[in-house]
Length: 411
Ligand SMILES: Cc1cc2nc3c(=O)[nH]c(=O)nc-3n(C[C@H](O)[C@H](O)[C@H](O)COP(=O)(O)OP(=O)(O)OC[C@H]3O[C@@H](n4cnc5c(N)ncnc54)[C@H](O)[C@@H]3O)c2cc1C
Image 1: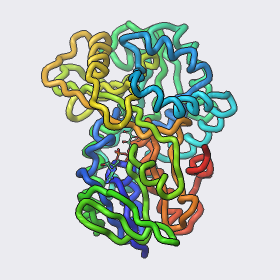
Image 2 (image 1 turned 90 degrees about the vertical axis):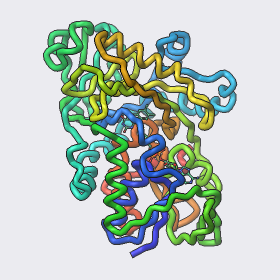
Image 3 (image 1 turned 30 degrees about the vertical axis):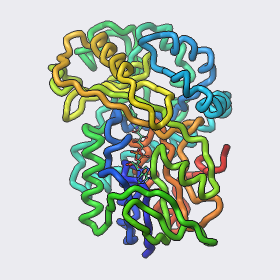
């Protein structure tokens, strides 16, 4: 039994804590917020091995000016932040060769394929399996040409065994009648799923972790005290805590600590937005995505949520809710009769690496420190598989997938 401290009570930290506690370790999570109230609060809820395709794809650079010029587009870079984002953006573009995206897709599918299998024991133990739905989802395109422009992304998925059934306008209408015949082309991915409330999932796992003997302390970590063998204490806003083993799951803030431990990584806040329509008078049998406008609409227990957008503005800048308004307009374009009453808007910070892969593994300098952060668009789907990997590493077992692509010193 080891004494383990985890910084971060997002879905990654909580799933990791749950896996470690199952093995009998003495686990404490430290977070200044209650579980699941930062980025893990408001995501689109998608649990999808089909998300193995990196964000940076060949040809992306040519698309960027169009995205930026389009007021309804999916991307915004705040001008004042551009110089700071530039090194990350250059690495992002540097990850777009054909061989690189094949390599990334291989690494991601090996982890994401395990999502249902890795979430199941946590959800069963916490008695919340109802939150996870394996409904499939559909991706729609305005035109057949737009679909063909995405051919490589679909090939990457199909080559890795993801079932992607091409459907026409009539097929789309059959699966999701509310969409009507506005879309020429679609793809149905029947084996993917989603959660009906990402916040409740994180909180329920966290509550069960406490019932199983784990500890959660609501404190802000200010600094890590490092001895010759690695971290030996963390200093928090409520005093010093001794540390024997440390797992860093602080989402977009992780580099503030990993760089102190000798692993400086290119982690950027890829900010996204959602609008949740609490009484939409709309029913969907499964989530719907627009590939061109890069959003998901997910039927959740608290209403219909549209989530997407990528904004580079740094971690601390105030939200720009005009990005959420863009999502609102897309929602109305797709479903003109949706009811807007009590719609709520939210901004979150995806902890993103330029190559779309997380950082998972041991710190390069210290044997008592582990990293589990940087999941970008994939933190929910990747959380439970990541927790299982960290539990393997702590136990000295070989994880059941190759984690070298996720090493902290790859850049
Ligand atoms: C619009 C949007 C849609 C998304 N859709 C999906 C999706 O459909 N599927 C999917 O898999 N992913 C999705 N994501 C991504 C997903 O939400 C994130 O990858 C995930 O929430 C990251 O989880 P995390 O635990 O690493 O980080 P977080 O949830 O951000 O948790 C990190 C925790 O660390 C704590 N922390 C940080 N610094 C300190 C400190 N100094 N002291 C104490 N605590 C600290 C924070 O308070 C926070 O609670 C989406 C994201 C956005 C924004």
